[in-house]
Image (cartoon, helix red, strand yellow):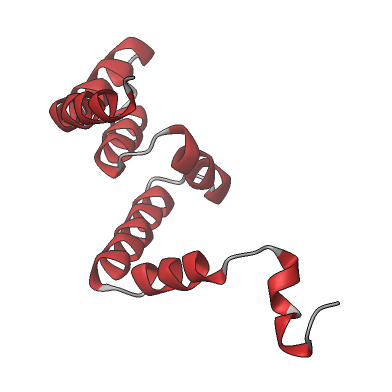
Length: 111
């Protein structure tokens, strides 16, 4: 039998992560990120793209600079290969930190 005060503990859901996520979203960095995506949506509207295109790009292309380059290049009528190359060049800047993080996690996870 559980005590009346332990009713929330039986769900198995740890709300500390949710509260931390809400705090992080309400921080200055979260506000800047939200404003950046509002600006990206304004760019999409000015170039006559649909809202669904913008929403689909969020999970498909993580970095906002790549999304901006993709939309701008597409609106100028560039070819698919050129658009992919331009968006990939913006993502190259993320490679050194990725390599560094992967090298650190390999060291921790190796037996």
